[in-house]
Image 1 (tube, rainbow, N blue to C red):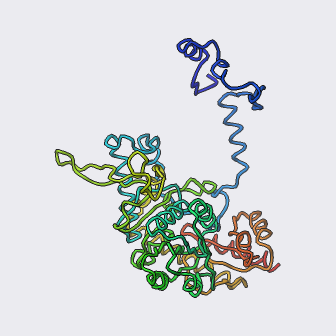
Image 2: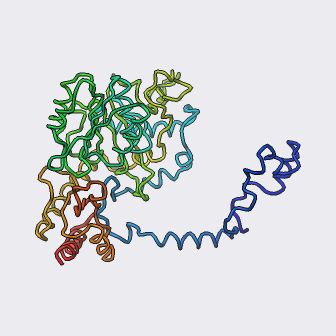
Image 3: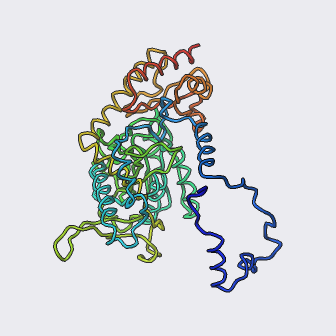
Length: 450
């Protein structure tokens, strides 16, 4: 058999047309004027057998550089981390793999429990009492935090650090246009948010102050000091976009007074996958529970006293007063949330902490080795697993030569920060071995100093 999947045969088509009283497929489109129709066949390849198609796709896929054959030091929001083998086994089960969003939640107890566990673990990591059952990714979670802040405070000014992921900042600016919000980017000082600029811009019209922890440049923001400034305007909200893996070691934002903590759980069980799909999380306080986008899964008991799970709050249009809503998001990233839940469960509380510590230790080893190769870090502050170094040559040129040696180099900061031309953002995760780091540093030094 050449084709495994035949969604509709010619006989099926004929039977359907006869049932509705149409003579041909063209008759179904008779209301569409001829002048706007294409009038020719689509320029597509002729269908081939399944075997031939798989051969063609395999050859195309082989042109891509993958993280099995190349050693990656690229981060900037998407990281190469250890993924426990159990993750693929769990998410490949049909009850998870085919689930999207539970329209009959009482029938999907396994899916609801997985979401509940996701909420619980993110709550523990962030030190926030309320967590939704996921959003599309970290960037959209930041936008939802802006929407909630503006809707709750009735203020129009958003202060966002220039050290927040550049794509997330652009998303915020795009979303702000529809709500007529003013977005002010805060300056940088030694790789972190300039607190003097924050104090200057923060006023009674500020809805939210947004920082990233660790920030896009790898530096750890002083959340306690930032919160002190935010609290001078009681209605302003403190939003922190945070890498949840880093919180295995760092003090969580919830302990610094954050109102909303968002981020991306790609670091737990989700491969890089060309930059997506990922899984965003949204954590906040009980006060804001009914303003949170997406949905919550709650734990209860049935009439027989058995443990069960239900959707307790959801911001679907058919469930809310639209004029009172702060968001129109109606979905969640179920499969990837399950993947992150499985990864965090497999690692366990101690495993997450150990994984976080390994990232820090190996990043510091990388930094020290780079310094010996005359590649010193550009910033002096505390950091997690990413550092910035200044090169004597364009980053694109260095990365091209690194690639020829089997390495995926760091991110070219000059692409998004003109002031950081020839600066490379390097990520070292727990799976990088000493041999890999030493080989990478040697190549970096030879290329940069050659």
